[in-house]
Length: 234
Image 1 (cartoon, one colour):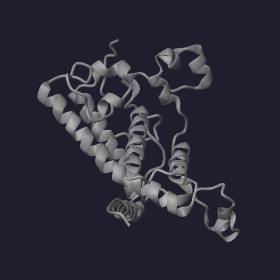
Image 2: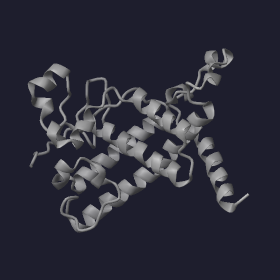
Image 3: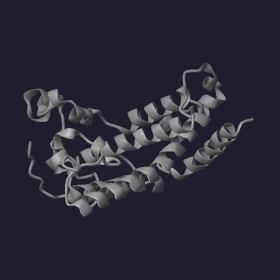
């Protein structure tokens, strides 16, 4: 057995052991069979994710949480030190330049700190078990970045097989109420939330000024992040 194989197996065991920290979600959220399905042997039909796949996906999300927050801390520090924004910075960012580029001029240190606090608040609800629903557009984007970091981590260690990939896809489908935030990456959809089509489809406001506003009174956004007016410049 090669050292690479040993390392991969060690990482896999560690990730699976971390799955229990994602207290807000049962394996079924990742597409794994529930107890009734196990009893009926439906898990052997090949149509669902295995419990092992679900554990690995959940553990990868916990692992990726550390990566995500570390990178956001570094981005916020860099923007503060250079007194600049993502668009005007000479060097790439760790994470913030993966947000919708149309608002890059407004991703300054204040924004970075608000986004970081939002990421901390969301991942805290994931790990302490109090998560119910995503609360705002910023949280939708945090989750998008978190899923991306989890996939990169799994791929780095040779652990992103079809089952684990399906588990992450199932998790995303279960947690997201819709995928409207993806339109932020498509300039042809810019302004759709303010159009008759958007109104007909029930699209929530997507402009930067709305990112930290709760979707409803029953949604929680950290006080540090909420209620900060942002002028939208193009």
